[in-house]
Structure formats: structure tokens, C-alpha cells
Image (cartoon, rainbow over all chains, first blue to last red; front, side, top):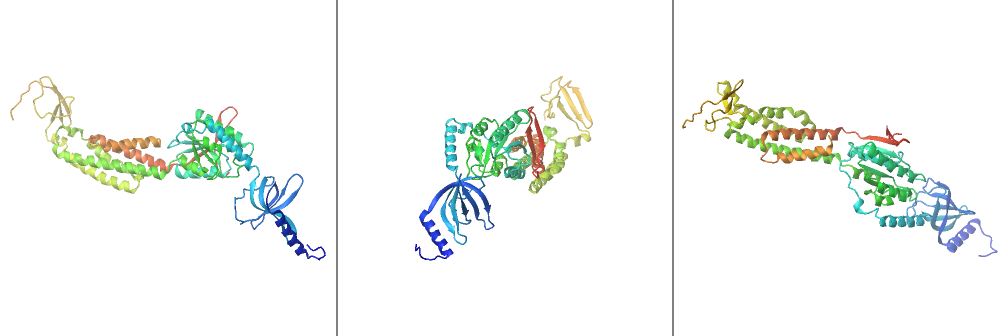
Length: 408
Length: 72
């Protein structure tokens, strides 16, 4: 620089800016966030400080995001990558960050890997400990915050898919220092509730997404052990798609989000309704075929078994089911009505051959007592056999005194 | 009726009705029973309303249930 020259302010700021940018370049800076404010533009302004010094910093919105910025808060220790510069219009010296990470990340990650290896070697993750989830859970325990998004998502999904279930919420904090203790008490309380009050078919343990610190309680060794010990099958539901926590490895099933956990937990009503409709359709086909065969058989079998053909039942079946059937939907109902007409027809025909009609004209039917087939021949009747004779309005029990067989 | 039991019974009834040798009376009886079960399941599916309870374990080991209201 030329010392004898008189600078304009803007020239000086520009020169200083160049010096700073070229002299220091892109660096990693560690410090504590304070004075955080988000401008209407979406840019984040804050101060980074350590015990004795501070610097203004900015994270511009819309910069190519190499890594998404975690939610920042005052007091948070961060590692920021960026350049030192001067904002020339104000002569203000500031750090422009392009990447911001929680400073503890490396340490947390290392601890996560260590715990994962340890629990894995103890067998807490092994497949033989994984229990299957019940297909139709009646009571579902949920361990999460009563005020978070997770409980809302779970309730909304289960209420839509399978409102036949009941949800039992064991409220617990899911972030902060108290969270591990509360999650453990929640799991243990659910276990006791299941054995002493009403059996819980499964538990959903989790929370919505957040920073790695927010999810930390689900990486707690004690929480993992409590989940492992629990006798009720557990679905873990922590964070968003990509977040994996220790409890995910211990749980019987891992769901990427609370909503996904709810979907895993219960069947979907329309699917079950469809399988019911299919079963009804098959039953209709079955009985149709059966009836057809009966009406074909009818003509050729007017003898003995006629007593066994249940005319009254046919009539009842034809008339009495409309009400229940009305709830089964149109297609099923139509199929049923076709079948009902067939039943009516069949019962009409049965009535025509009902042996009780000839009885009114003075004929009678005789059979050996205890048998269903009417006698059509004297052969086979022994002296002393007890016979039952059916007339129109009653029956007569008699004993064979004499048996004569005539040649036909 | 429990849904899973109902579905199981319905399946058994259906299988039995598909058997050609089933006596007519039994077929009709089973058919009636099947329709009744199907209608009951359908009704449970349509009528069900989700219940959500908040559970608090008290110091004496008993549990206190209260209705959980999302609007809280």
C-alpha cells in the first residue's frame, strides 16, 4: 500500500476486505452461538464467542448447502466453516459461514459407534430376540411426549387405519436431561400396566425429528437396555427417515418416523373389509352350488330323507338375513338377493313334495323308532319291533305283531 | 367379537361351504353364521372410534387413566 496516499473510506474497507479474505482464507472456526437472530430475508446473524473474545457471523440463506444447517440456538457450541470478510458499507468485520455443525458431533458420533459395538457384542441386536408384531393389536402403548408432533401423527394414522385399537399414552419427555429417565419409566410402567391391568400388544417408543442432541436420549445405553428387557414388542420411531439411534437396533421393529410406526403397528381397514367381502363372495358361491345340487337331487329323492330337509330353515335363511346383509355393501347384497330368490324357489319346491301334504289326505308314514327313513317294505321288520307312525296331527307308537311280505 | 377370531371363523366357514359333500342343512346353517360374522366384522370396522387414554402410574403402583385430548 502507498502510505502517502489519502484513502477514501470505501477504498480502505475494500482494501482491508481483500487483505482479510486473501490472508486468512477459508477456515474452520469453533465457538459458542449467541445473539442469534434470523432476518426476514432468512439470513442468520449471530455472534460466535469463546471465553474472552467474540466475532460477528452470518449464514446466508440460499448458499449452496453442503450440509444442512442444524437448528441453531444461543449457547450452542458449533464448528463453522467459512471466510473472514468485511462488510464494506458498514466497515464491519464478520465471519461468513457456509457450513455449521454442532461442535460435539464428532464426539457424539464416536460414542454412538462405541455403544453400538458394545450392545451388539452383548447380543442385544440379535434377530432371535426380535418378536413378531401382532397382526391385530387391541391395545397399543405409546411412549412419547404428550405435546409433541409424534403423538399427533400416531393418533392420526391409527385413527384412520385401525380405530378399533386403543392407545395408551405414557407421557415422557423426549429431549433434555430428564428424558432418558422418563423414557425408561415409561417403558417400565407400560410393562407393569400390561401385566397388571390390561395386556398391551405392542409399544411405540419415539419422537419426531431433531438435531442429534435432541435425539440423544434414544442413544442412551440405559434406554436401550430397558427396551431390550421389555416383554411387550417395541417399535422404535425416532426422528426422520435418515436418523438411526441405538434404540432402533434393539427394538423389535424400527420405523423411520412416528407415522411409519403407526402404519407398521396396525392393519388398514379397507384391506380387511376387502378380505371379508371376498370370504362372503366365496361363501355365496359355495352355497349356490350346494343348493343347485340339492334341487337336482330333489326330484329323485322324495323318499325318507325328506324329513331332514329343513324347510323352515330355508325360509328363515331366505328372509331373515336382509338386515345384517344390508351392512355388507351393494355388490354382496345383490349376490345375496340372487341367492335368496333361489332359496325361496327351492323352499317352494320342497313344499310341493312335503310329505305332510299327503298326510292330510289320509296317508301316513311309518318308520322303525329311532330311524329316519320311512318303511317302504315289510322286509326288515321283525315281530316286536317298535314302530312310529306319523299322521297329519301326531304320531302313534305301536309294536309289530305280525309281518307279511308280499311279492310285488 | 375379536376381529382376528371372526376372520378365522369366516375363513373356516368359507372353506367348509366350498366342500361339495357338506349336508344341505349344515351348509345353510354355516352360511347364516358366516353372513352374521361378516356383518359383525364390517360393523366393527365402520363403527369403531379410536380411544386414547393417558396413563399415569401412581406411587402405590396403581394406574390412573384419563382421556387424552389432543387439543390440550
